[in-house]
Length: 393
Image (cartoon, rainbow, N blue to C red; front, side, top):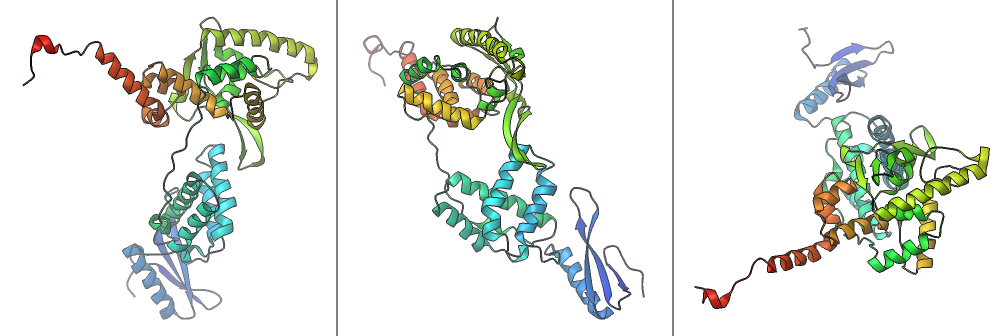
């Protein structure tokens, strides 16, 4: 028998009498180590047939690793091995939730190799029909597609069946922006509430709620009236802790780290709040946890976003301005700037957006007014004196 060539697969007889063939089917994209498949038969000739078929598929790119792995098993492997080590906890939580709530109950028991496009399409259609937003259905599809892409790289499937489905049309979500009158009403009510300084600060800076909750007094320059944004707080589960907990993290991109100048009234509000917070600290004594943060509970502990959302709804009801969510404060800040003809590039930097396209797309509702203002500005410098110039030819 001639010498076996590279990737031809080794064949040997086991102690139990069966023959085994070992085939290198590829290499791990993460470790570079060879990925091997094992084939068994009662005869040497039989196992060689299986080996040769596997080698042919590897050469043609149609090889599928012999496994009975269910979709649910692979999704867990993908989440633990590929997602958890490479993304932030909040991102991991999003993937984990999609898998646990939507994917596993619907297709988790199906053999990974047997999963079909029509089953994925039915899943997406059913989720959309159940009342889920098109955005959530899109996330379900994106998560499954990413997991199947990795399965394809691992040789577990020959094609990604999620590539061929019809995705729901993207819906344009209308954002809530307070009018100037509504903003002033809300500010008036907020000034009489303990958490009013938080509401007023976001309205005057456009901070994300997580950024506002991570603010420390050392991040505020009262003399210059400016905030230095370096961190954000997220409440999330992690791969090692299933209970939600506050987690401080740096911005995802460098654009998230920024300095925001504050209106004079906002700076003065924060100056007064610093005095009030110091009085609270003295009153609570040893029960107070001094974290150095600007916005906390009466005992100095982190505030929950859910509580803040409920509190803002109460303030909005008192002000009689309709429903207002936390993100509407940020949207209102950006809208006011654009209405005052602040350049969109400046607004992008103040908001911490990575790309100006996101800013322009999000606040496209303001663009028509800006265009009209631009046309009016041209009126003063672009005039044709028909009497002096005569008829145009």
